[in-house]
Length: 397
Ligand code: PLP
Image (cartoon, rainbow, N blue to C red):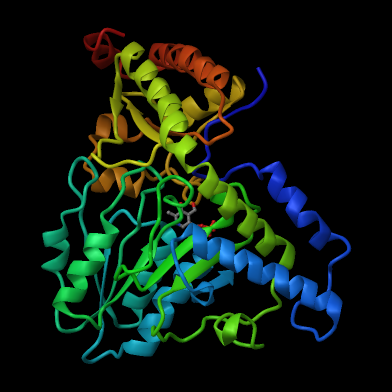
């Protein structure tokens, strides 16, 4: 069997149509889009077309509210640091709120700001990975300047009610800024930012079939922030640096295609994900679902295998050409169990054996059937060499 790629929350393959659209800007149309001659205008126009495509994808009327960046990590850093340095001060406006299950690109910035004297609150989730809005709102104080909540979790797929959160936050204090990390929602569920109270929203091209190294940040009109990158006047002086025309064109095309394929994602990708999940849960006696939130993106499942080591599962799956992951791509390499699953209080017995399978519109039925056949075999093999023989026997393995 050729490679079975079930790690689409880590990154995705570039759609051939995206490559085709990018190609002229990697070859003939190489002018600097800020220059004054016609060949540069061709590039500048292509960037503006991509800006409209991304705005349309995010349900934003005015494309001027979209800034292109190098990745979603940069978008999150720009929004969080930009808000804190523009609106914050260490005496009276020094409190920032987020959740315990954010991606490291948010958590690390919060931790860094704490070291600089800001106060941070990390709101917990329940055992299903769900967030209680009232609990989050109860953490707001007169010093609060920013609330960051991700739209969908990269490890479990849990969707958070970001529109409601933003609305309720503004009811308490309209000056508090709301940043949403939308990376794992983009291309998987509809996004409509116009007429919402969300101030900043980040996306990353490589999570929805554009290349790595390009992202975007939505900035609601009227929001000021201190730019992260200083230099030239590109991106309306909000993100300096020569624009990466081919990658921005790729991001725009990928956004257009993601919108066109959304119904397929919500029906067919979900059907294949459910087939995979049910196939594994019904045939593996020590398998437990970690993706238990009532709202979940259609492509993700996270399953814990009790008394088995996750890294070993990944190595054995790799031998069979199946790519999956434990934890997020950014934390793999570390043996610490996932902070997301720990926040959900996943028991110790399956915490270390939890695997994320994430599909895309390129995942086939044949690939899912192959995984359904082989994952249980791998778990059976590993159960035989697990040091927890008594516990596994008690489970019938
Ligand atoms: N936010 C979430 C939820 C993610 O899953 C990721 C990537 O895994 C990022 C942010 C960072 O995206 P990028 O690789 O574009 O910096």
